[in-house]
Amino acid sequence: MEAISIRKLTKVYKEKVVVDNLSLNINEGDFFALLGFNGAGKTTTIKMLSGLVNPTSGDAFIYDKSIINQMDDIKEIINISPQETAVAPNLTVYENLVFIAEVYGFSKELAKEKAVDMMTKFNILNRSKDKAKKLSGGLMRRLSIAMALISEPKILFLDEPTLGLDVRARRELWHILNELKGKITVILTTHYLDEVEALADKIAIIDKGKLKIIGSLEELKIKTKLERLEEIFLSLTEGEAIL
Image (cartoon, rainbow, N blue to C red):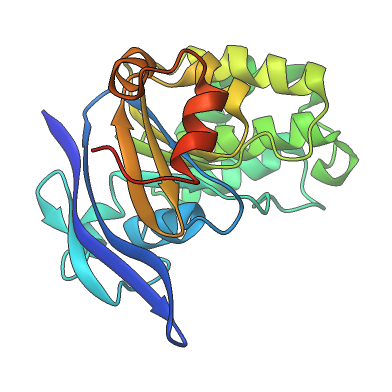
């Protein structure tokens, strides 16, 4: 079943085409990676799909609902962990989670239960009383993703989740994210090739707003006749599209 169907999605800022006639499908339960250099259009695509930015033209359907005129319905089944970690720095880890759960309509008691559950899953229960501003970058990202998941979305957008983290923190977060596979649909934007190899079921490479190739890593290797993701990525960001 398709979770997301993107059809000729385009975004233009002051005559600069940031996303250019993007069309692709994402299946339910996929861990789907959008790979590209900085400025390739990854974040803008996520912002359009999550209702933060209106497209210039085209449309996308999330569980058959249009981002143009049914975004209120879509927002009930999606959530996003943005590049800029969306936590309240002066609230504790526990307070951040309870607050977000209540925002999404859970009762006070259920919000508390869900907060403990999320802290357990993300291995931050021992930091529950710490203010968010005291957390390391890696723990801050864990909290941000836990806050995005506490609403029980069908689709989670992760925008550069490990940007700026050290190697150990990145690997720890990968382990947690791998456990989401098959449970919900995850759309990951990143420019880290090793992150894509570690996490993604399907990969779309975009360059200057255009889709260059899409498929599993093995499918990409067959299509390009190249063996390494780095080779595939560099060849397609300099050459012609292979769709």
